[in-house]
Each structure stands twice: as structure tokens, then as C-alpha cells.
Image (cartoon, rainbow, N blue to C red; front, side):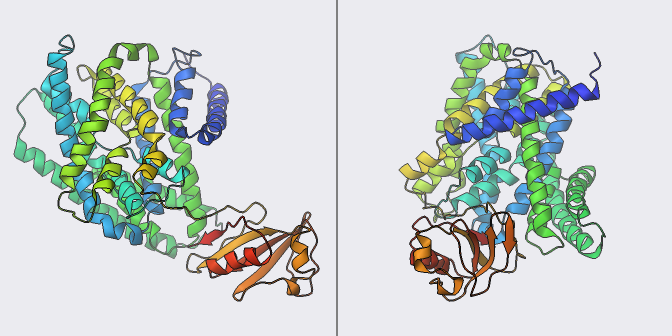
Length: 504
């Protein structure tokens, strides 16, 4: 049956709109919005409202493109200054940690099949393939949940977790591909060749990511375009090119695009803020599309027969496999304390990436591939429900949560400065009570280094002078290079609810 483009656009726009509405409502109740996107896809799928989507190759293509953009965006938003102190533990978790997770969970799954569910009859290789698909934490889930919940964590935990999730997908991908190849060939693996393949993928991926990232910055800065709208598109195009070029050079494209994002995001280039905001929007669109597609692809009725073994594997992974991996991997890093290790263990979020990797055996026709896909799907749902909803609570229990800064997006002023200009800005609503401290701007008790640069009165904006008379209902755009000066401004005019927007 051929679907018209008009119908596809209509259904797609409705699904996106519903996902965003439900996501907004779910955020208030602490439910991960990525899980809600997944549920929307399932509700509208073949066992729900009847939207039939069974094209595995298309789902794999969508997953690859979306994951590329998500990793690129994650790299762009990550600051070297934040990850520098945690690079080595992050790299260890992203490589050795993924390998240990796959081995431990694979062996447990094989044991589980032989002792509790002999009817499954899966081989050790199949169990290892299954474990490989979900051996990495999911970048979309970790980035999305940590940032949407505004978690402020002690001891550099947040950059460590984001670095791990952004860089550990390549290892899981290679393990998945390797075990698929072994199963398809039916021969004993050449361990030396397997190790060499992994090293080549990692080295080429990291090298290409760095070199092409530097090259991308040079290209953006040297090309002068009459239309500034082209710069965000150019940045996205370069990111996709880096992924694809690295793949054809036998490197790991996922690692390359993340490292390239790190290099580009920490460099100066033309129209940086606009371009990065555009990529962030495209990444969120990719996350919605990705989770909707995966929700449509699954048949909920098939999940019933795997739910018991999948739940047991999930419990093992969350409470034994992931903690054991974290504690073993981070033994050399004495500065990472016991509570830190516990929290890192808990943020072992699974999400879209394991499901994407589980599509690979499905597309290749590997035996038991549908069983693997359904198991991974249930594990993802359990992880998002159990771990995703409890990240703030666990951080408070372990006393690792810091009081977040009161950052607030502007409602009436769309103002930004170059990244090099360090500043703090705020909007102040003038009320009758505020006017008691001064009728004219010059009478307001503003600290040094603090300026009112613009006033909004009704629908009109204007630059004030010292003699500007203030009215109740005016909104002031106040700027300072000192956060404490803004805090003092609020206190001086009797406003206790302090919030601001920082330019950094």
C-alpha cells in the first residue's frame, strides 16, 4: 500500500504535536519525556490505533541519522573545561565499562536461559549479542533527562555521565557488529583480529573526529555567506559529513561525530549561538522522531511472552551488572568516592540507542533477532521508568545534589551577547511596591556595574535614560558582569524571587 506524502505529513505532524503536548505534561510529574514519545508511538502502532510500520531498514536509517545528530549536539554542548577533570574515568567507562557490562550480562542471560527458561534455547553467542546491544548507556536519555530536570550534581558527576553516554555507543556498536559477524559466519572468532578491529575503529574514529572538527571550524570561519541562515545548515551538513566520511574510512562514525562536536563547540566560529541553537532544536526533533519510530515498530502483543525474562535481566543489569561494572572500572580513580560510584551506577540509562542496535540483527536476518529486539525494548522501558524517574531523588538521598542556579529564560527580551562577553542578565517587573524605591530610573538603588539597558512598556521598547519615569507594569532588562550585583539589585528593591540568565 502506497502512502501519499500528504497523508504522511498529516499523520507525522499530529504525532509530533501530541508527543510535545504529552511531553510537557509528563515533565511536570517527573516522567521522562523520551519514554512518553515511545509510548505515543506504541499507542498509535499496529496494536493500538492501527498505524502499521514494519520497515526495519527504514527504521534503521532513521535511527542512524537521528543518533548522529543527537551525538553531534551533545558534543557541541559539552565544555572541555567541565570534562577535562573526568576524561580518563569517562573513557574507561565508555570502553572497558561497556565491555565488562556486555560480558557480565551476556553470561547471566545465557545462565538464565539454561536454568530458568530452557525453552528459549539461546546460544552463548546470542546471549552475548543481546547484551552487546544494551551494553552502553543511552546518550539521548542521559542528555535529555539530566538537562531537562536541571540536575546540578557535585564532584563533576554530570560532565562525567554525559561524557560516558556520548562516547560509549561506539564500543557497544562494535561489539554488536562483531557478534553478528561471528553468528553469521558460524566460525570461531579470531580474538586478535577482533581486538585489532576495535582498536582501528576507535583510533580512526577519534582521529577523524578531531581533524574534521578542526577543519569544520576553519571552513565555517572562512566562508562568507550573504544569508546568515545558511550557517546553521552548514554546521549540520558538516556534522553529517564527518559521520559518513569516517564510516567509509573504516573508523567509528559515532565516536567521530561526538568528538567533532566537542572540538567545534569549544572553538570560536561565525554565528555560533544561532547555529548551536539550531542543532539543539534538530536534535530534539530527532529524539522525538526516533522514539516515535521505535514505538511504531514494536508490536506490544509480542512483548508479553518476553516480559518475565526481560524484567529479570533488567533487575540484574540495574542492581548488579551496572554497579559491578562501575566499581570495577573506576578502581584506579581513588578520588571518585563510594557515593559517586553508586550514583554513576544508577544513571545507567538505556533508551533509543540499544533499540537501534537491536534493529541491526533484525535487518540482517540473525536468528532470534525479533526476540532480541523485544527483550531490549522492555529493558529500555524499565530503565526509563525506574532509573529515569528517580535521578533527582537518588541524588538527594546520596547528598550529591547541589542547589541549582536560578537561571531563567527571558519572556519579553530576546537578547544575546557574544560568548566571550561574560555577563548576567535579568528581567525585572516594575510594580507599585517597586516604585516605592524610586519613580525615576536614576532614583532606583542599582549597584555599581549594573545597568538598565532597555524598557518594555506595553508593546513598545525603548532605551532609558536616568530621568526615565517608571510605570507599574514596565519590564526592565538589567545587565551586569556580576551575578551578586544582580542579586543585590533584587534585594534593594524588595524582590525576593531572584532569577537570572547567564551568558557564558
